[in-house]
Amino acid sequence: MFTDLFKYISRNKIYCCFALMFFITVAAHAQQQSNSQLRLTQQDIINLKSNISGAPGSSNLSAVQEFVIAGDPSKADFYTIVLKIAPHTKIPAHLHPDERMGTVISGTWYFGYGDAFDESKLKKLPVGSIYSEVKNQNHFAMTGDEPVIVELNGYGPSGVTYVDSANDPASH
Image (cartoon, rainbow, N blue to C red):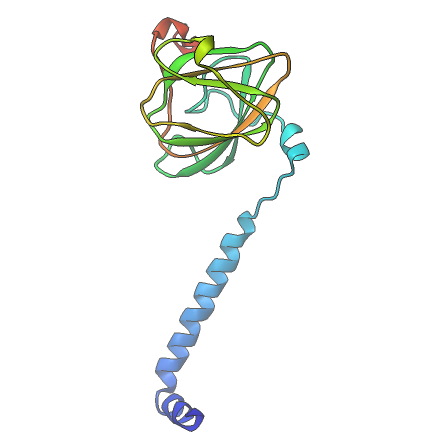
């Protein structure tokens, strides 16, 4: 079996050289792509400093800081953002044009679905909870006495549309 392989390689040296170069190029490209490695502990996320303002997919509220961790939420691509929400923040009913999944990193997040902010529809989501922000479905949220950090993953482009445009700080 190995002698047949050796004979084939010997007769087809040029093809084997091209194949080897192709595999080396692919391996080098894969290695280059791995330079985007990211490892953040919960404390690393808590210590993040703002790197963007008014990015697509945020609520536009001054009490909400947004951090783009990976990708670009304004483009048709996978992205990850982190939101830091101040204590005693109420986010009115709004929607996003993309499907998103959230994870509570710290604090207790209160999240609900509907066309108007309604505390009776909020579900208490402690650290480690997962929730969805369904494409084009209205939802709302709030924090209690502590700040909250959530991670959102989605496929953009993202954005935000409030049920009542008067609630959107970007429209003022």
